[in-house]
Image 1 (tube, rainbow, N blue to C red):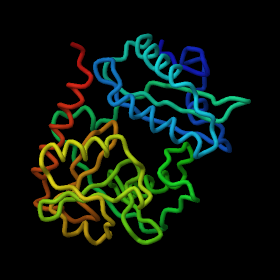
Image 2 (cartoon, rainbow, N blue to C red):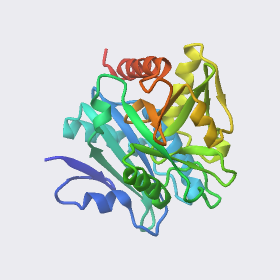
Image 3 (cartoon, one colour):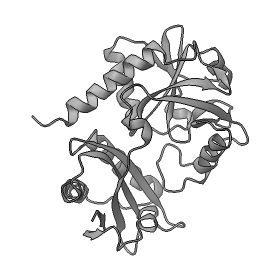
Amino acid sequence: MKQIYLDGRFIRQAVASTSAAAAGPKQSAGLFETMRVRHGRVYLFDRHLERLLASCPVVGLKAPARRELVAAVKELIRRNGLQDGALRLVASAGRGRTGVCITERPLPVEASLEDTPVFSAVLYDREQAGFSGVPCVKTIHRDFYCRVGSFAASQKADEAFFLNASFELVEGSRTNVFCVRQGDVLTPPLESGCLPGITRARVLELLAGMKVRCYETAIGPEWLYGAEEIFVTNALIGVAAVTRYNGRPVGPDCRGPLAGHLAKVYQNDVENACRIG
C-alpha cells in the first residue's frame, strides 16, 4: 500500500483523503513543488527546495525546516519503492504551524515517450493574467491556471499560453514557453509574470552549454506565428516540441532540430544527475 507524508507522519494513502490533504484549505496560503524522481532520486532537488523555502515569506508562511523536507522525501521514496515517477510537495498554513504533505504522483504519458514529446498549443485570450502583487510564486491557488488549462482542453490542444496586462506572452497553464527565431532562443523574462521554472532555468543553462544564444525578452503573441520552433518545459515532461499553434503548423510541422536535440540533452542530464555510482 502506497504511503504519503503528512505533518510528520507516514500514513497509508487509503487512510487519508490525499487530494484534500495535498491541496490544503482553499482559503489558506500554500505553495507546492512537483518533482521528477528517477532511479529513486529527485532531479534538481536542492533547487526545488530553495524555491519553495524562498517563496514562503512571500505568501506569509513560516518556512518548514529544510532538514524535515529532505528526510521526509527520501523516506517516502524508500517506503514506496519509487524508482521512476513524481512527487508533489505541499506546504500550507495549518493550526499554528506550516503543514507539509508529500504524495507520489504518476508521470504524464508524455514523460514515458522515448522520443521528444509533441504538443499542440493555443492562445488563451479571454483574460490577461492578474497576479495581485504576488507574481512568480507557485501557489496552491490555481484557479486562473485551471481556466487556461480547461480552455486548452476545449480546443483539443495540449497546452494554452496566456498574456499579461501588457499583452505580452507569459507562459502556459503548466509549462514555460520558448521560441526559436533566426536561430536564437527567446523566452519571456521573469518580469513578465512567468514562474521561475526549475526546468526553465536548467534548460537555459544547457542551451548555453550548447553554445545557443538565448534571450529573456518580452514576446508578443504574434511572434509565435513566425517562429521556426516553439517548445515548452516543465519538471515532468522535460522538453516538448510544439508543432501546431492556434491550428497552424510551426515550422515544417514536425519536431524542430533544436528542440529535438535539447530534449535528448535534457534527458541525459536527468540520467546523469540521478544515476547512482
